[in-house]
Image (tube, rainbow, N blue to C red):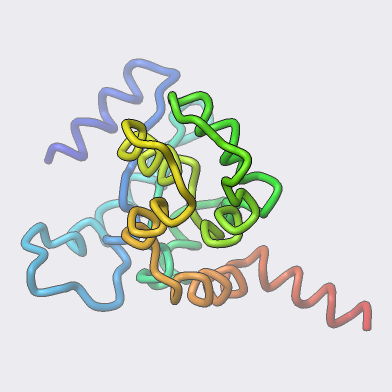
Length: 182
């Protein structure tokens, strides 16, 4: 009922944006027993609501997901018209020195910036800033960052994200184009 009301208000007050966080929960392959929210109840209701929205209603629906590989990719692709994968940050994008200086840290000549950039492969700037702010009261060494960085990301995510990317319509088109080029 609440979802119906949200979309009714959006149509009445254009332009509007509806943000659906953790949209993968609706299409999860297996729901954990600890999850009491029953996210699958939206699986039948959302497509009906989405089909009722016309371009002249000026409503944009954005679904975000931190774990898209937990969901049924086919269901996500049917529900959302476009899927945008935001890639991991590369070596050059991890500007540790500027972040450390910006958040009140001090970098000495003995600070091994290269090793820190290699260890932090796959981390977001948010994770890096969190590590810096937690260590800002002490002189920094590279070894101090490692315990904070280990908390944030699992190594197996790298492989599951690649599999998800290849199952999306854009990934299939790219694979087909590469195959035809050979």
